[in-house]
Image (cartoon, rainbow, N blue to C red; front, side):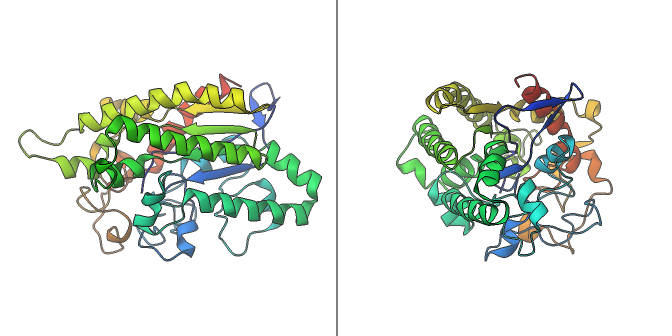
Length: 349
């Protein structure tokens, strides 16, 4: 599922400016959930797949690729923006070329999270297994390009880590498995500890520049609105969940400088996706949206993944919808998020 999460990005040890504005990265490496999964779930046994129409209806060639959107994801758009390549392939794709491997791949899996219970519930790729795939990737890169070149590519890559939304949805809000152990504040701390461990492991494997994505406004995801909808005054965001998300993001912002200071030579950046999404929700006309509380697929209330199918009715114009299904943004929304992330990141590099 989601993590609007998206979302998204990666970096180089000391990025070099080109043309006074752009930055040159040899590769982009992506870890996380469905907001950044470019198709790995196509190759595992799980219901959390987007390898069927209407997903991908606005992707080049109008083909479903496993991306949970009508088109490209923010990480694809970022790769294009930085001049690395137009799209990022999934690592599990069997026919990856040498070029694709050397310019970066995606290890993300829709439905996963930092909490091991999250992936177990959805039967997708845990974050720990994403690290194992990354180790395999490193070995393939060494055999292909040599150890020195492989270390350089990984050390100068832009690394995007985006997860966490599913942890709170699956384990605290909708399926309260962790609520018997933690209150919301303790569970946030638990997730941040797992995130900290994940970042340290990436560092130990050679990554040096990372962008860590915060939580989106979880309470504004159409599926969460549906779950809490009482029916009296129309659909509105679940404020309590948004407050929780903001609290988590504040903790993450405070944590990242401490992680960076403990990992010599690292550059770690926070990617704020909460504000761009709320901007689109609060000012839909400004961004050209007609609907922000429902997805384009079906009723827009529940449909996602296996129940957003070729037989499901669709909205007439997905670019008028902030969300493509009941969880995931449309490509148009991802484009605005990417613009905002570009400003956030380039201002700090």
